[in-house]
Length: 101
Image: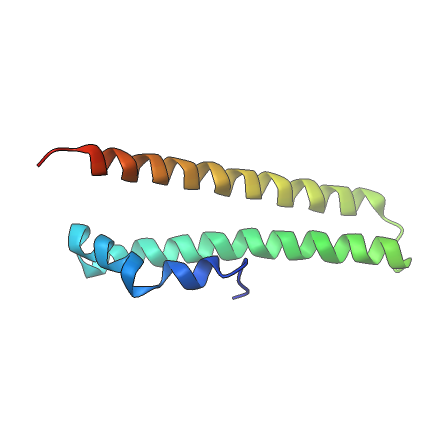
């Protein structure tokens, strides 16, 4: 899997996983972490595919501007979705941190 600027390597870090393991157990966090890594990988693949389509268009290998635009839009939408999910996860984490025990 290709990484987006080291995001996937920091997800699997011991400091980030320790809090999740303490909260929900090792089995549950491993499944969640794998799902998260897979989703980030898919977004990264869409970004790479869009980059290849633009490169092919710029070098003259392809003249299909529609396919390049669709790839760019798909990459943009998937990235925006990933960022909104990230924002929701951070908001949920902050809400949990504010809870009194």
